[in-house]
Length: 151
Image (cartoon, rainbow, N blue to C red; front, side, top):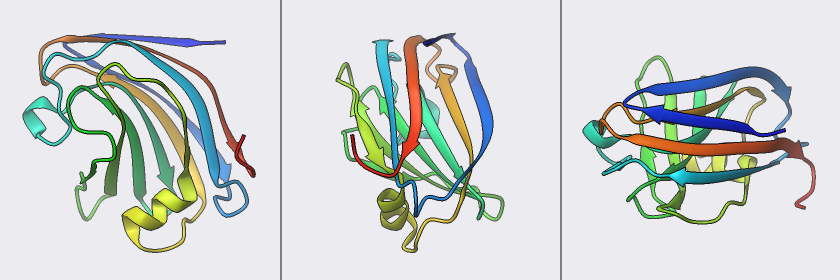
């Protein structure tokens, strides 16, 4: 099963509540493919903060790790995108431009982003957005799963 996302000057997301112990299941793996990146998208600036795809992991302490496929922000970039006191967000650019997919270690990424061990995961969101740049984007998601070992 594959989810196909398409965005034209808009934003769309799907959310699912989950209960995952990040200490026991620290690996999150999925497949994603981008068919069109946003024109001028760059997560480092509010006015161009559009991505062809994002996978957001929400924790029970009101912290969120968005894994994003950006158009121009370099792979490995991390950005504080928080709106305190409501939620603390640290975005991680996993891919930039037209690149290949892979997997991430959520528990370790949480420690790097927030400086403490990851609490329980409470939800997942898959998202696409192109409203800031007024452009279009396209992507696919498949096989998102938490694991206790890297595969």
